Image (cartoon, rainbow, N blue to C red; front, side, top):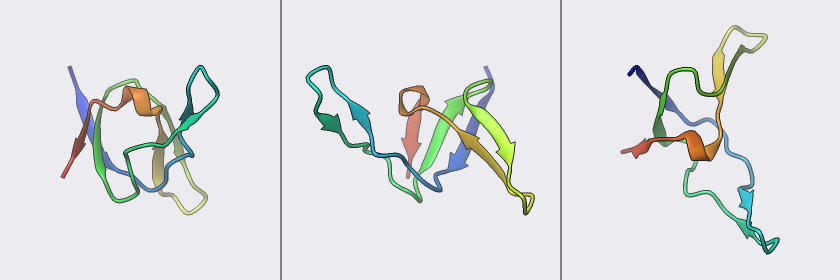
Length: 64
């Protein structure tokens, strides 16, 4: 298993529960997160920086 660690640059508003309430994320910009290979969507910005968009449920660990 290959794991990746990236620093979080931005997060979305969170997920919605079945009753319609919004559950905020425990992850904040600046955290480092670990996830498995082949998870998420990789892309490069116009200035050449690499980013990966992943779902919160695919994060294996939040590192200090």
